[in-house]
Image (cartoon, rainbow, N blue to C red; front, top):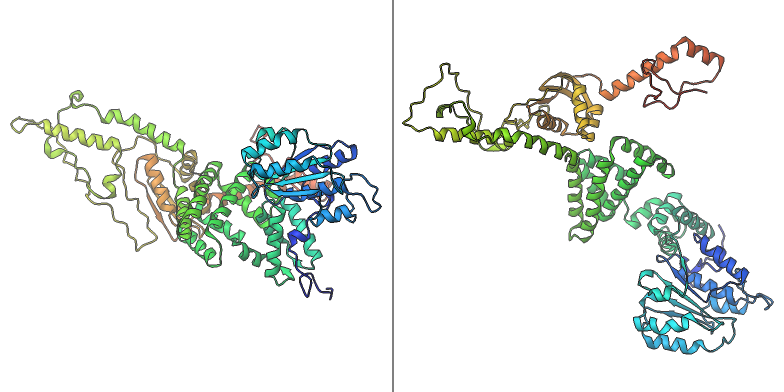
Length: 629
């Protein structure tokens, strides 16, 4: 490293990076290729407009471009004989004076502080006079949208027909606030946000010039936080260099400086929330909060991750530009999640970002957003709701038949159906069952005590009344999960005969998260219609048994007992599928024809196969091709 004193040490005043590395020529501008090409060709051909308006977000180079245009128009070259050039020399008196903001013929006006018509009138009065030293008089008006309506109107005539020695350059971040009458008199240039990779390369080059060791991951974070603004990025880089003692820029320090969460922890938080793991989700948020992550930034990162996964679900190639760890974890997540689930997460998080930012307690607000996200995975889709409502509507007419249409005699009061009262059991009965109960009560009221009601010849003993309290759940035994809301109405639907049929039923109702858990985390111990016993895998959700029992009760109308076991159990459906595919692949490789082909072509590999029993030309889902090399 050089022993010469750096700028900012000793008697040399320090200049921030945004000023020190401000572009001086069109070649120094980054990310504005269309603007540079247009202005360069216009100067070469002599087709220069008399008014330009530059628009774009803050920090992309609007004012800097205006100063470059002023130097390019007035540069005389080292010998003092050159005309307008797209490559100003930077050494002549004109270029030097303009760079130091002291040229008498280049006026810079801040419309934010000089908005009135009197300020514009003073400008118009000076337009008529020819330049004193330069070739053109250049008027640069920054934040031009801040001018008043009267000021714009006063400028219109001069802007439409200015003297040949006058050039107007306007800059604004709010192009829609500029009157259309002004826009129609100017050549408009939209300065684009600078791409993240170009910002990253620009910051790396500056670190090399400043003799600072900048980690690639740290510069990537700064470029991402800059959001397309070169000036914002340079300000953050300046701060990061100071944080690193002027010799290094490290990823961990930049994360702490920006209040960002570790990207891998964001993936962990997203997976835990969608997996229904409440304790793990809130624990991860607490951990991120303790290391300095802003709760609003955490929710923002989850929102960006949801967009990344949604885009990758439709366009898998979009993950190729991401780091390897994110490609692997993102690829695994898009296999498990559907577009509907990702869209629901997007809506919850999008609303949650504003809630967290405006909440008096941001951390608690972020926790509530995550709790919503945890339980969103168990919500039915709109299609499920429509099917359930349709099923209830079809069942209601039978239950609401008037008593006069019933031909059977009314049962005696002692045979009336006793309704379960209180608790979750009484609340979970279907509307049809409650209507049937009301009908029985109406029949009992119609029987007068004086009437002689003959009982039928064969009277079956009355059924014992249903319990009036909710079934007990033994909380001290985590291996037992009892569905606590039996249905009141018998089911007319056929129960799934195998566990595979259960999974197919779950998938047909588009409960994809539950279906993925059943395929991946269930080691079946025993199965019979109405009863399932299984051993969960270590990664299984804690409420998997309850969710499965609730789903089967709602879909079949029967109570299912779903219990957990410590026994070994069978392999999961996912493991069984992989095993079958491996067996088929091994059998295909062992086939004499395949062995002969591999012997004939050394180094060949089997990259795909097609079952002989299938007459279609479609390959299996896990195949990558139809031929080997």
